[in-house]
Image (cartoon, rainbow, N blue to C red; front, side, top):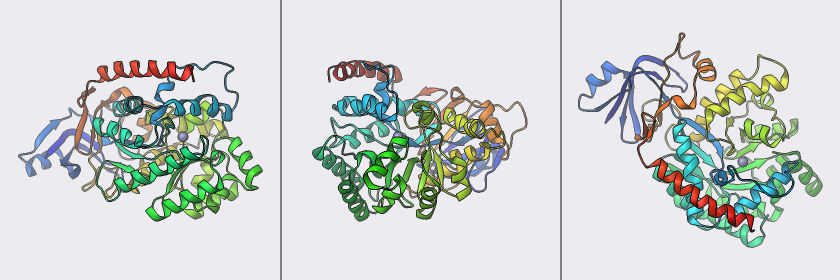
Length: 445
Ligand SMILES: [Zn+2]
C-alpha cells in the first residue's frame, strides 16, 4: 500500500471534492481510499508514505485521439511545394510517412517518444490511431510494448484504409481483429478497438467487412469523420450522401465509436451522431494547424453529444490542447462567454467517461475502486482554490512543467520531474539515430 499525502486533493468525478490536507491510499493498481492525511495514515500505519509537500494531487489527464506514429515528422521537411490543402497534407506527408514506417525499431521509438513526453505533461492515458503500412502485422504489439515499458494507459487500433491496395487493407483488418482478440477480457492497461482511416480512403466493400468483423467482436470504431471539406466532397460525389450518413448506413457509428473531428458535419449529421450515441473527439489545435476549419462544438454540446478532446498527434500535451479549446470558440463566435464550460467538461468529465467505456474500472477520477492514475502538480494557488474554480486556475495558471509526479495504475513513472522507469536521454539519442535513417529512407522513396 502507498499513501500519497500532505497535499491538496482534487478528486474530479461526479462528486468533485477538494480536500485541503488530503491524501490518497493506493493498493496495487487501484485507489483504496481518499481522505485527510491524518485519517489515512492512522488507518494504514504500515503503508509507504509519499509526502508531496503541499502540492496539488489530481487525476491524470487523458488524450482521446492521438497518433504516436507521427513522431518522426518532427523537424522533417519534404521536397517540393508546400501542401496547399488537407488532401495534399495527407498525400505529401502522412501517407508517405506511414508507408515508410517498416521496422520494429521505427515503430517502437516513434511511439516511445510521445508516450514519455505525455507522462512528463501529466497524460496518463491515450487513445491512439496507428498507421504503418510498411509493417502492419504485429505493429500494435510493438506499440503495446512501448506503452507498457513506460507505463502509460493506451487504447490501440490500426487505421484501416484502402489507400495502399487490397493486400494492405486485408493486413490492416487482420491486425485489428488479432489485437482486439488478444486484449479481450483482460485487465491490462492496454486495450483495443477497431481503427478506420476516414471515409475518403474506404470503399463500401471494406466498410462492410470491417462492420461485420467489429460486430462479431462486440467492438466499436475509431475513425476520422469529415475532418477536411474534401472528405465531404469525396463522399457526396461517390455515394450522394454526407460522411456521417454514409458511415451510419454501414453500421460504423454507435455508442462504442469515436468519430474524430466532425468539423464539416451539418445539422442532420449532428442528429445522426446524437441518435446513435456516437462519441465525438474535438482536436482544436490540429484543426487549426491543418487549416480545415472549426468544428461546431457548441452545437455538439447543445445536442448532448458526448464530446471528448484529443491532440491528433499535434502535441502530447493536454494542457496546451485544452487552452486552445477554451479560447477557440470565443474567437470563432466573437463571444467571450463560450468555451470555458465546454473545454472543462471535455477534458475532465467526458474524456473520463470515454475511457470508462474501454475499461472495467473508472479512469480519470480519484475515488475508491478507480485505477490509480494520478498526477502531482507543483501548483501552490496564489488565489483561493476549490472544487468550483479549479478550471480557471488550470487555464490561467497551470503548465506542463509543473507536472512533478505521474502515477499510472499505482506505478510511479515520473517523480520530482525525473522519469524513473527508463533513461530518457538514452531513448532520445537512439530515437535520433533511428529517425535519421528513416528520413533517408523517406527521401529516397
Ligand atoms: Zn487523427
